[in-house]
Image (cartoon, rainbow, N blue to C red; front, side):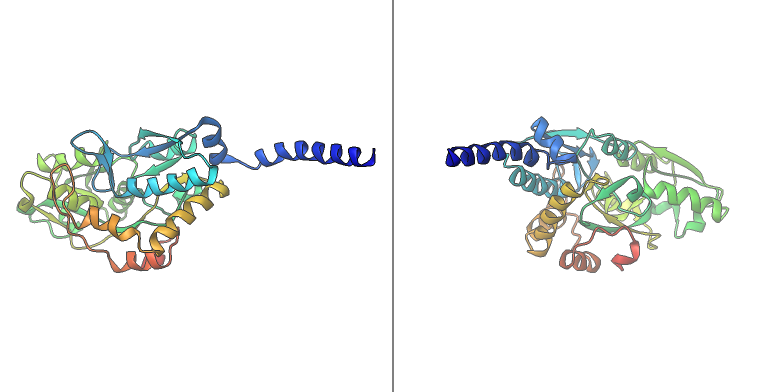
Amino acid sequence: MRNTKWTLALTLAAFAAAPAVAQELTGTLKKVKDTGTITIGHRDSSIPFSYYDDKQNVVGYAQDICMKIVDAVKAELKMPNLKVVLNPVTSATRIPLMANGTVDLECGSTTNNLDRQKQVSFTNTHFVTANRYVAKKASNIKTLNDLKGKTVVSTSGTTNLKWLTEENGKQNLGMSILTAKDHAEAFLMVETDRAAAFFMDDILLYSLVAGSKAPADYVIGAEAYSVEPYGIMLRKDDPAFQKVADSATATLYKSGAIMPIYDKWFLKPVPPKNINLNVPVSEPLKKEFANPTNSGDPAAYK
């Protein structure tokens, strides 16, 4: 009888413990487990980070990194058949859609800074760029001062637009600032002379110029106005999901497995026009790959 009671007690204890294990999942991991899907927010024209190719497939450097995180989530949850849902976002909608739970990862060209970290979180930095402008060579613009009283443009919801608006006031430049819904529209404004310059991260400007009808017609400003570290965006205060993403990206970067991915998008021809951006890994990015960080402080990348 004593053995029977002991066996029954063990059985009941096992059943009692089972729900506790299931309850360990919280936040994004629980959402993904419960729905059987993970939703990736992507951009439509942030070449070469996240964009539609000529077959309307979502491709890019950040997209490839996001899929490595998805693989880590599949392994963590033991869900090899986890469904991936793609959800387009813009510069203006990406943070709200992350905060309200619509997307689980945002894979694009999003700057990680201290202000944004009040609303969302980021995994380890995957690229380091700088804020500059592109203008037509014929305009003979060499400095910010040359844009006094002129019409300029930046993309809605970007750190570049925020900086431009603040600097316009600080320096009393009297610029008329237009906002575009995406980078392609902003560049088109310069192309069609509706704006004298477009302020954006230099890597995106290089790709837009390279893919334009007349690349030789444009110049990208020599002065860098700010350091812009890019990160994959996650929901704030979700340590379990953050741990999975950080571990996946740190392993990717420190192992050197990131280099074939980097070369594919920055040192080889990329779709849809098969243009080679020819942008080698910068020294700040080499340091980041060796010692991954999700710091939003620009000083961490100098």
